[in-house]
Image (cartoon, rainbow, N blue to C red; front, side, top):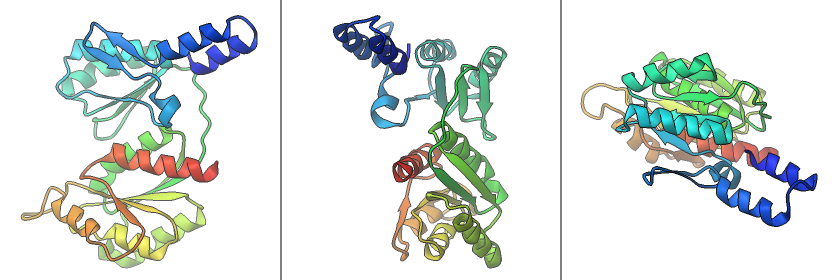
Length: 254
């Protein structure tokens, strides 16, 4: 049962204030076999739902957690999915709406009758096509966090004119915040930040050659930026970038 349903029943006089309070408290925490605690009230409190971290979890337990959360909230986001787990999750698409990222690491499962209003607009800029799987994760997550998205791909600084065009497109589409993804030397977020007046979140990608590869050079470059207004999340942290961007975008629209 959703918070909205509880409040509706209270308004209609079907339950008392005390009963509504009790249900809301119960809604906020679901315990499974004394091992797993689902924070069902997190989206109500924070605006960002609890995300199930799949890595290292037993596949049967993961599916049970997903089904329990679907029963309570109607939607589940799962991250860091393994190959075996993904196969089982895909089978849920027979009954539920299922969206899986290009990387295969992020999945959204939800009831087919869910209608969600979009508030806020997020620009997502990827330096190269190698960054596209991470950009896709950000896009899926940002949309599930309640925002519209605009995806701009292959605008790395090796062709600087493309970077300038990307900055213009962000401004033309009136985005509230931009997530800019780059591997290699990671300079793209600083340049986008210097060309626009919007908040920019730098997302370093684990793409690169030799020393400083796996996103380390990109992370250090973004942290050492001389362009004020650039915030940085950890390497490949699509969830963190999407969450911060959504909070900024929705707050601005509010």
